[in-house]
Length: 228
Image 1 (cartoon, rainbow, N blue to C red):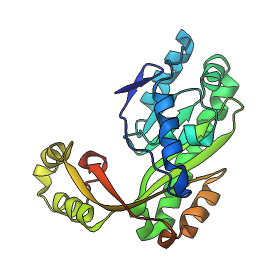
Image 2 (cartoon, rainbow, N blue to C red; image 1 turned 180 degrees about the vertical axis):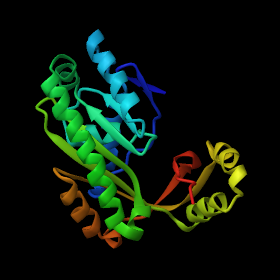
Image 3 (cartoon, helix red, strand yellow; image 1 turned 135 degrees about the vertical axis):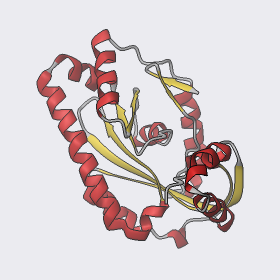
Image 4 (cartoon, rainbow, N blue to C red; image 1 turned 90 degrees about the vertical axis):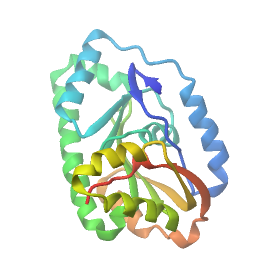
């Protein structure tokens, strides 16, 4: 487990096949992020973070200093809930001390969730390729949207289908058993980022998987959605 502002997040792979020759470089950036000291927050900011987590239970909230979209994406990819949200500590402190700022950014989060849900409906079958959806708010208050996508190889698809076909009462136990299991296969991964949900949808739809090289990948079962 890594700690970001005192909040534990699961380490997961970070992939960027959109520009294939950057993979090693981006992995090094992720390692660098892991070595960063936890962000120090005021008591008010910590209380604000807890309030956000209680209010938006389908979101993983992370607080960290980041300097680029690549760093933001590496944090967001660790989320284990429906959506990941990365907030710069300065913005969180502002939310904690200014009611107008709090209303502004919570409004942004609520709007983003509604728009992302609509986007997923519009994606149709392509929704299955979306592994993570994330939102970042930087120190200037700029909001960005991220999607990490994965087109699983045949062995991974079979692994997921076997789990989905399990009896309803056994689903939770099956999912727990799958946690930590490894399924290998040829997999394609990509990441897209945008300044709006509409732009994110456009980029996902425009993604040409034929231009992305498949790689051998070891994947833990716990990140898959086992719901029917």
